[in-house]
Image 1 (cartoon, helix red, strand yellow):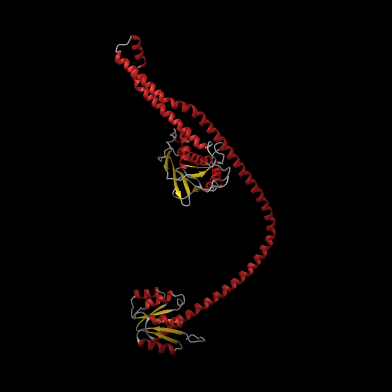
Image 2: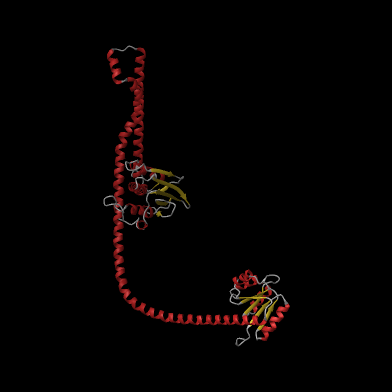
Length: 469
């Protein structure tokens, strides 16, 4: 037997009193301290109060069998390390594999020889002692490593203190450099704001001036078309009466009727006047869109219909949306929800729509030029919806090539552009970001998820909470 200061405890679990008696006597005779249990439940209770060094466990027992008892012991952190040797008359390989897979260390088949049981008990107790010794040595080694790490850390701390003295000097230089960089950035932001204000002012004055100059003559023409239509109808009606009552006009009148093709003229004149009516209506719509876009004739801050501003911007961009020799027409898909009026700076907000929509058109044109054989219909989708807490959302997306990750990180930086020299200033998206976030207290972000195949910009605005001018 192994020499130890105290007898090693062994728990025998078996429902057969004879087996319990024989095994107990044999193990006690060898100097072991033996405890017995006649079923699995009793065994589970005993190990809680008195932890054995090894368990001899019968498989076939009333209540929970040996396999389940073993499984419960191995699932308990307090008993998982106790070696378990199964004892059973089941000698087939399948049962042995099942027992060993549950965590048992050995398998003794009944009927068994006392010497065999004692030999196996000694071996597994020795293995258990060696494992415990190894565990203890590992703990000691771990403690030694931790002590050395503490010493090394102290050395590191000393080195860090020395480096800190040098770092303070470097930090002073970096701090000063940062102050200069921030001053430069502030200067750039101020330049951007001044450029934006001047740009909006010049654009608004130009658009408002054009709208005013066009509006007066168009209204004059539009107002007289109705009278012209009535007069022409009266004249044609009068000539029809002459034809009815004087069917044989003089030769000079006959020649003139043939020269002007009176019948065609009588049919085409109403169509001509109707076309003029449609044309003046179209011009009036364009003038209204220009006035809505500039908003110079209204208070700077006003509650407006966001959809009107988007539609006015689309009207101005209408020529760019039409089919071109190198590409198809760009389709505009509107998915408008019923939005409340939004208190905002309408002219500035329309400039945001103009910048985003113009960039979308540029991206679609570049994609069609790069891949003329593409069967994809170039499309810009505009969606609006109401958000909780009195906010609204405008989402503008396209099915273009998308924006590379490296560019996405700088999309709102001032003076950053991917366009060739002369085609972009790098201020459009930076100005748009300032208008939405600083002037309106809203949010403008680029969506990079899988919901959008191209580029998606989302604008979120409060309907009432507006930052001070």
